Image (cartoon, rainbow, N blue to C red; front, top):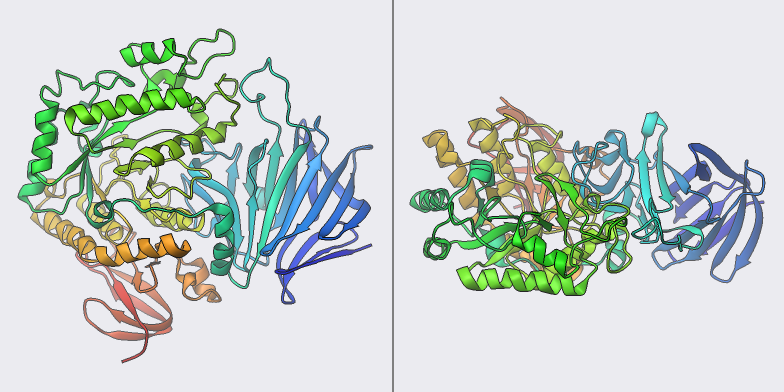
Length: 635
């Protein structure tokens, strides 16, 4: 027999086959597959069908589902929430995995989840896979470093997986199946060692399903579950560009390079907030000492950088070089994650080889590392740090830690520690870190144009990060990192500068003046534009602290029911007032621009347009960024 559960936000209907249908004000906003849940073992799926038993409750319902495997049942508990419903799926503890399937259509398009190497917008524009789904430094399936198990559809529904004791895997439209599949798996190794019992009880996955009239409203209803920042990054970090040594100098950077770069920036009167001295300023990773051969007078260098108007930060990862004194000290005190076979530091592989990994579950280890970094600050006048790494994949699944921890929780502990102690800082990893008011940097960009980790992905990632609750977005370096023989040409550098000038923060490394005077002049013009709109950006940051609103917004934020706005991936809103239509393709000097409902004034010419409308073949010469201001009333 069918079942109904009514709550303040809508109604849940469960039919004779067990399919879930969520309605709000008589409108279908979310539905599961015909057979929503399944058990998974040894590559075989057993679908849960035909509810076997239902037990009504005062605030919900409990249903047991039969499966095609004799004796195997899955249970669903439904609870009502003010914002929707809470679904708790459980299965026997011996089962390796259990999942729930959701239909993508007709309630799509879909958004959320987090950063991808190839970053589609909307999310369901391309198939997506994350196995496992956790913060990852460039997984083979495209999973990246900032993510949250959160998905929205255009109908106004959102699905948020609660934190639990299981690992997660996700596929979206795999093999064109039209499904979002969320799986909970028993941990690969139990909380840090094969020799420890798997004490997780039953296999369990809890989901909050939020129902709202629109996607922006669903976002607002989710904020209490996600958390919102209680502080913002320093105003200067948002107002003026960050300059970093990495893309220009890589690991060969020296004190002479840093000072030469800084003098060039100052001589050309570029706005500036921070000079980041990236890898490799230190003698050994994990040793808080400058390489004396490359940096003979670090204190004098920092003093000169301060005179030139820079704050100074140093690049720091959580890895320790076995050849360094920092490793030996950390190992002696038990501050690194350990190998289960020997109890000695586990040498994890990272992008610079093998090293010890800071045990962030150990409060004494964090206190020790903070004291060393603060001593470095005091000795040389350093203002803060660029904290790299922290992704879950660097923690081996069988590593021993001071306290039990799932791999993805490493990221949250790391970010929490950074946010507690430094303001002039940034991180590049996050899972459930939305409450921390620091800059979250996009993953290292390649020097190319597309959504394949190039310029276009700067925008699609910024939109994605906004929707999963990260408002203080730091785009990666303008022009990309110049990896693997790729180097931006002047056109790519200019278009990249134009886009990031209208994002919350900017970051240069490749010098515009290396190309020609015109490139230099255009890039400086847009760096100055960013400082010009800095008061507006600061007002948006203050709004975020009040109500959680994102700074970077998709066009449908202003027009939730606009079918065109729901799928546009090459325009965005900065707050309520500015609409940006950057050029994201090489050789393009004209582009089509969509203006949603409202009155819009082109910023340069003052021409006013009434939306919704298309501006077809709109001029966009190399030196020009199409930018429109929303007017409250037509003049």
